[in-house]
Image (cartoon, rainbow, N blue to C red; front, side, top):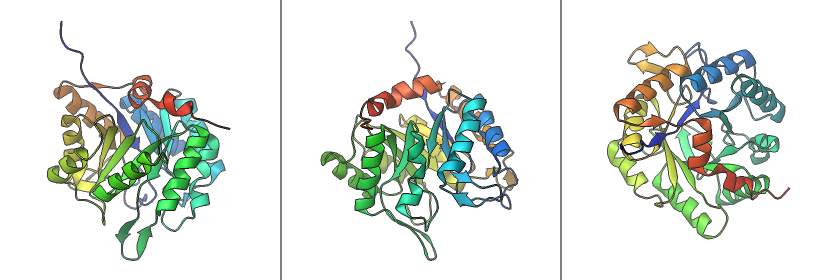
Length: 284
């Protein structure tokens, strides 16, 4: 009898807050475009849709009602998929503005674990008190946080707050590699971050730009999960724009199968991440 194959969870970050249709005309802005991209990614094998909201003109927003419209549309098209709103939003947004999607009671949401220099005068601010507040609001509503890490110090911050009871287990991290101001997208640095995580934590890896594919592959080799999509990368190859988020998912599915791995369904992803344990913490 052959051993059971390990399951890999694929997250599709379908829009982001910074990329535009001027960079790639397939980046979604409208509800129809969001549904198209989410459905294609889910059909290709993504279990999680990481969601930044945009208005029809492409303006990033954390508006609760815009998130509601997008989430309802995506759920209708692919009801099983896990929808994970961003609480990062875009630089310059207030904490209360960024937290609006939590009012819709998603299964998961992103929790950024530190401040980052994005370049020039752009500073992505996440103070310790903000992290504690965001985590408390997620716990109150039974939302599982995906702890967003851009550098080793952010793992240390998250684990320190976990020991203080501010971030509760089970812990799931997203290791973002190659962002300007953060850790580089190299095998050395990814191995360093992975070995800094608790043994019982789960992790996803997001490689930005040209580091996306190599970091995705290494993540799977190290026992982790992967994130792909337009938020992190617009190109399928040098000089070749991606046609859709589904293209990125399809490529990772092919590689995972070559590595003798299986792709997790949404229900399997919920079990692997132990999402239900966070739902039990809901206190409202």
